Length: 359
Image (cartoon, rainbow, N blue to C red; front, side, top):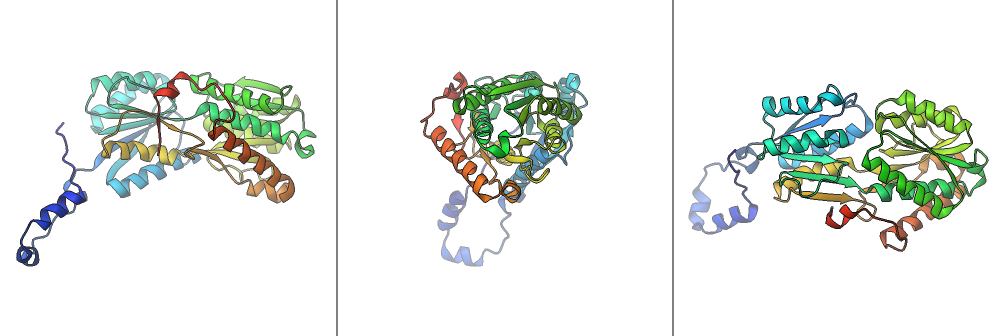
């Protein structure tokens, strides 16, 4: 593949300034804009089996790709993989048939196929979210949404909520539901447990895995079992499957914490807040990094750069009142500030030392 030349505004301005004034006035030949001269970057986003472009998380990703399309003139398509067992084959087919400049995917199930194909296609850039790949091949870049920070602040929030009667009268424990037993889920649960016990050392945590990031019925059943066992709040780190746990909160008249996108209004009065992960920024960052020549390594999106944050609990406030919700929201922000300033010590994994902070 030929290396593309990138033209800068400064370079074009310098060339113009070196011409005589008369030439600048009388030269009426149309100069082709940069976006019309350079071939668009061809991007393929590979969706996990069972995912839909209408899913909230996918809508966020597409927002980021749309922003990149407008700013950097890319072309993109989303392709769903047929099954987990066929990801290797399906990824290879996309590479052979579509000849993309970049492939982007999300989730640990893509790790091995991505690394294999990155070696076979050194001129294609491979971006992955949710897996900390560092120093594998120069055409691989990964983005992580600090799992341990995400888990810690959600666990602490659940414990802080149970310090208030409006939540504790619904139960004395919290529940954790995972879509799988991958490294990201394990790190997030570690943070969740540490955060919950940082606030309340004796807090009971129920834990289960449904081995699926799309099976909403399975997550709903596990959450209902948790609520029946004395949990007042559940948190599902399970992608689209987690929507089932949110539904269970309404069915059981209990509470839950949303994740990935703003889910507060899905079941009003039952979602305390949503942990927002800016997948739009992550998707955009791959394109921007490629354009600016810094497509490599691991980038972290965390509390300090607002890659992860919370909703303002406006929906919950309508149901529980401003006094209770504002107090909980303020405590959450004090906790966030303490984490950002490292006033609270948590065991960051080793790969954090090699990560680049996303700006």
